[in-house]
Amino acid sequence: MTEKRRKNSAAHEKRRQILNAAIRVFAQKGFHRCRISDIASEAKVAYGLVYHYFENKEEILNSIFDENWGLLTEVLASADERGDDLEVKLRALVDFILDAYRMVPDVIQVVVMEIARSSKFLKRPKVDAFEKAFQNLATILARAQATGHVRKDLEPKIMAYMVFGSIELILTGYLLGTIEPSIGETYEAHKQAITDVFLQGLRAPRAEPAGA
Image 1 (spheres, one colour):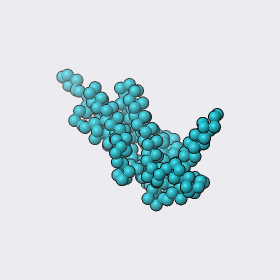
Image 2 (spheres, one colour):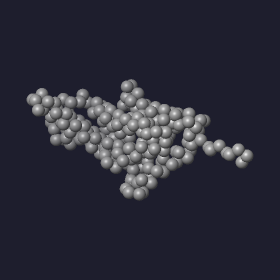
Image 3 (cartoon, rainbow, N blue to C red):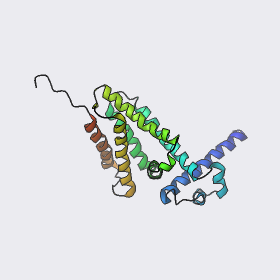
Image 4 (cartoon, rainbow, N blue to C red):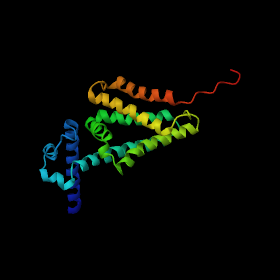
């Protein structure tokens, strides 16, 4: 490895170390009560080093948003390539988000509680990035309408927001401790319940056989 590549790799690792520390601190204290010194202490780096990689707390939070919301958008794009089965696509979305909570709960807490619910940090172009995931799902639902699998009296974008809204509230219940984030069969049942409820509400009614 050349000296330049070694330095770039070390810088990347240090930046990642600071971001991971920020996620833990934001999850524990909340964004507004957290200070740069808290992040530096958690990351075990000098106070000034945080400012070497990030201008302020807002830039750190935006970086967390960019990384994790971008993954969600990619998941939806990938799900849309899995044929025409709407259940498979919706379940892929639910699986990704709830599994992410189980694996990295601090990240999900920051994304849901500190970013998604704070209009202060969702300004252009962040709003555009935020909206992209909803629009991807709306496109999937509109295509299902066109093929007759989803009711045509519903607005695709509103449906997309309703799907995300239900998932977000389940996550909020986990984060607040009002819903037990069980594992195994119960955990999978939560995923299937979200998927089933929406499929039952979105599906177009089957045509009655002639003469029925």
